[in-house]
Length: 444
Ligand code: HEM
Image (cartoon, rainbow, N blue to C red; front, side, top):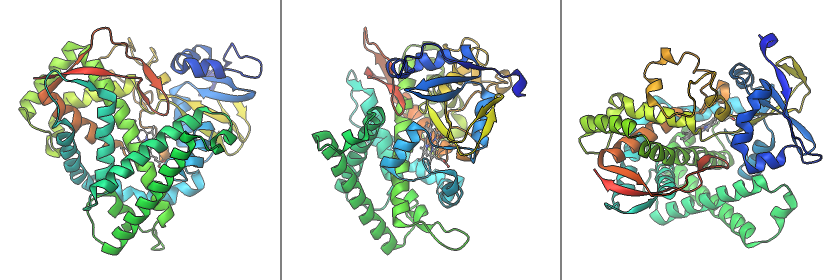
């Protein structure tokens, strides 16, 4: 198969800097142009080579061989340094045990319980909405998804002030991680600037509060139907559970992996709907007939097919996890190229999702293209918003449930109108959210 796959090098590398400037200034455009140069394309990050995987077959090979193409590379190294060795960041040798222990928390049987908490969170967020009000859509969707993350993790009767502090501390930590990813010198992180001190205080606060919650939950020994109860109940074949430190790392993992991603996707949905009246009208037809103006619940999901397609098409155009990295743990070969152990690989669902070879007219927002999966025959391997192989997103169903309930419930009662002359551009940081998005609420 690799005979037909091509290898190339990206032009325009600068002495010493390589492609760092192009990546820093317009990462999406830089990435989207790479397939022109090959299916596997060598770039330079400063003086170091890295390989960008641009073909779905090659991405699939990387995803399914997670022992050789292990978690690593600039993003994961930094995330691990800051956020520990949780399920998203850990290397292959720690992964299988963790995944087995965490998997029951995401079992289908648990979803209806989480869904109730999600529907309740929609009501909490929309309660104060008024006709004509201008919403900071990015901030509101972020408040929604961090609220869901907090509630589904800790459904016990926890002091609201403690939950609010956990949410606040987590937001400070993520901002800090995003900044640390772009600052190239580790020693800068040790200088006691106000930002670094705030970051360290937030980490200590989060550690303190989660430790307290772990102790309280262990003492009570009750299943609250939440993720935390499941993490505490998990046992491996030798009847060993997760240690407090491991649970702390998973809490941080669920917060970041769960809330950052959903909150990046939802604002794009509102932006796209506002500019595609036909798709918006189809969505309204569906939610009006299924919900008649009420909040959506788990039992409604099978009937919300158009809503689900709107979300799928949004994840295609703006995949929240737009950049992934790996590091080879042994010498291997890809697209006929020998890659020594320690080679950094980069791949991006964004590249695959915008490729005209797999999606006709790829920039067009068209939820209808998912109507008939058979009409999108090549889409499967070229559609990877949740990754694949053993490291595939454990929260895929959770996330789809959350986003579908939110979109359907909100659209049942509200429209979001664009503001005149608003410029909406992607901000490709850890997740691919709009840089800023303000829209006017209209009661339907
Ligand atoms: C639209 C929402 C989401 C998107 C687009 C998304 C995307 C992804 C992707 C692409 C990966 C694979 C990363 C890699 O291969 O390096 C991943 C892994 C993961 N995601 Fe998600 N995710 C979403 C929501 C969630 C939610 C809601 C949770 C948890 C509550 C979650 C938890 C995780 C975890 C724990 C992993 C690591 C799995 C493992 O390595 O075994 N994600 N996610």
